[in-house]
Image (cartoon, rainbow, N blue to C red; front, side, top):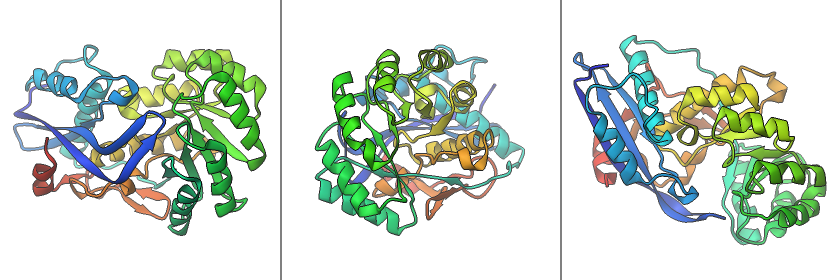
Length: 339
C-alpha cells in the first residue's frame, strides 16, 4: 500500500499515582503513535505499547521498526515485533474505515476496575472509589505486597456481590500460589490471572485449587492457547493487542481459549482498538458468560493526547464518535507529551 506520509511519534502519559505491580513501578507509560495518510488526506491511527517490563522490545526498537517501513507498506508484517505489528494493522483498519466513512455497530463493553498493589487499607479505599462510580468487577494486582490481607480488605470493603479477580503477573512460585490462593478461596475470587510463570505450572496449580486460572504473559499465540487447553490449567486468558500483535490475532486466540481483553496501559488509540476487539469477543458468547474487560485504564492517567476518545460511563466503555476508531488527536497535547 502506497501512502503519502507516515508519522512515528513516541510519547508518554503520566499516571495520577505510581502504577505498582509485581513487575515494578511506573510513573508514566511510554507509547508509540503511528499516523498514516493517503494522497487524498484520509488518515489512520495505530499505537504500540512496548512491554519492556515484561522482557519485551523497547520503545526505541519499535520506533526504528516503524520508521523503517517508509511510505510503501509491505503486504505482510512478519518481520515486525508484535507491538509494531499491532500499530500498523490498527492504523490500516482505522484508515480503511475512515476512507469508507463507515462505522460498525457499536455496543458498549463492560470493564473492570484496576487496583494497584499497596497497603490493604489504601487498596480497599481505592476499590470503594471505583465502586462509587459504578464498577462491579475489581482486578487487584498482587505479588508485591500483603496479598492475602489486601484481598480480605477489598472484600470487606465491597461486600459479597462484587466480583474480585487477582493478577499476579507470574510472580508466584507454584507453592506460593497454592498457599495464597488456598487462603483466599473462601473470599469468592472470580479468577486469578497468570499466577505462575508457565502453562505447565498452571496445570498443576489447577489441580490444587478451585479458583479459575487465567493466562496472560504465557499466552501470546494461538499455539500457546492450544497448549493451555491441552494441559488443562487456564480456562480463560487475558488478551492485550500490543502483546499478541493486533485485533485479528486476539480473535484467533479467543476462538481456541475464551478471552477477555485487557489494556497494556494503552493510549486512547489502543483503548479504542481494544474496545473493538472486546465487542467482537462478547459477540461470541452468551450475555451471562461474558467477562468484564480490563479497558478502563484511561482513568489511571493524568492526561490524554486525544480530543475525542472512548468514553467511560460507569463501568461501560462506549466507542468514540465518528468513522474508523473515532479518535481525534489533540495536537497541542501530543506535542506536550512527545518524547
